[in-house]
Length: 320
Ligand SMILES: [Zn+2]
Image (cartoon, rainbow, N blue to C red; front, side):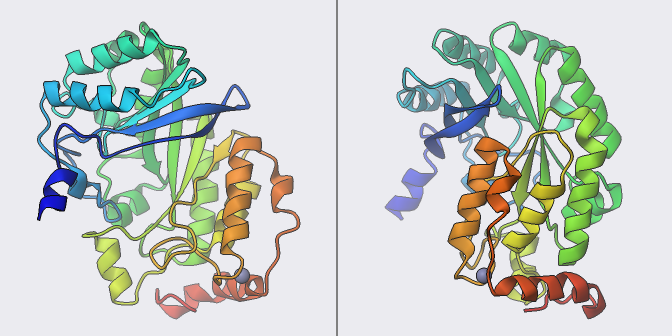
């Protein structure tokens, strides 16, 4: 049991990693920090298993976590993403003085932009103005889909498209930018419906966002999606479907990190082409060049085309 206890230590972040992100159109060094907080107050979404990472971290614990993570900053880091598996703007998760202290510490480094995540209900003008007075801020909101029916029944997200629009207007008015998460293939949607839902959502939300992040649904532990997958009534999206959305989304930048691509619990194709397609998706995120998808092909593409064509007739059961 020792391993489990140390994993949930409230003074250790969930994860820290360095990667590359687009900043003003150029690939730039970034640091991602997942702070361990008490977790999302909503915690009802069908695909989200992040609650398992939570621990009752105090303000002091959170500062210890942040200092551990800040050791990984390099002189070239320009973007820092601070996630909590919940909402950075929920004062129950991250007390205001912690939020202020973290942003002040980052503003004294070479970091130019901080990306934070929040549900719309915690996004208030005074909070955004306060953050932006310290450092440039991008607020990421998990809209998932522009369709209120899909968001409430299939994702169980608990807010509406109008809530998202209002929150996005607040962020913009406060001087921040907005990143919008779209979920590719919420449960109960066929492969074809999932593609059209993501494309329709990207068109509907584009006036309210500066950047889209397409999240490919994967199977997290302890979720409704996991139970459906165990019963054979859910399959994560094909990588071909992600390519289809990335190629046809509107001209707002759209990025995608195909987490767990090619694994049983992740988005995947046939197994032979997964690595190459995931690679192209990552390259597209840093270049926004749809040309990276041009020469991809595999024998499984025609199987995927059949699934997109026929799955709506299979009463919700995944084909292949
Ligand atoms: Zn293939």
